[in-house]
Image (cartoon, rainbow, N blue to C red; front, side, top):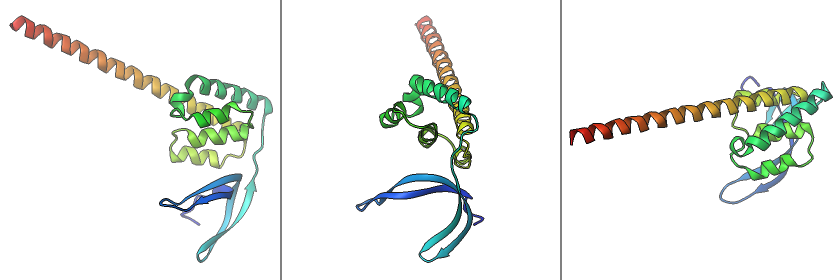
Length: 170
C-alpha cells in the first residue's frame, strides 16, 4: 500500500475495446480513500471509504464557477488545446463538481496538482484551486509571449544592424 496513492476514484467500466490497442473507458462514480489493499491473484481488492463531494460555501462556489467559465470562454482554445468536445461539455448545464473534474482532467497540470484535486472532496475548494491554476497558466502564457516577442525584436534589430554593416562595406 506504500507505493499506491491513498486516494482514488471508484469507477464503472463503460466499455472495453479489443483491437490493436486495448482501451478501457471508465465512468467515475465517487472519490475514495484506500484503507487496505490486498492481492488475490490476478486481482487486487481494496477496502475503501467513499469521499462524496460536498460544497462548503454555495455562494463562493457560484462565483468560482462564473469566473472559471469566463476564463474558459476567453482562453479555452489555448488552455484546453482546442478540445472542442471539452468546451462543449463545459458550456452545457453541468454541476460544479463535474466542471472541476472535466477541467482538471483536460488541463496541462503536473501530477502533484492532479493528486491535489483527487484528494479534495470540497467542490468549492477544488474550484478555488482550479481558478488559481488557470490564472497561473494564463500568466505563464503571457510571459512566454512577451519573451518570444522580445527575442523576435532582438533578432530583427540584429539583422538590421548586420544588413547596414554589410551595406556600408559595399
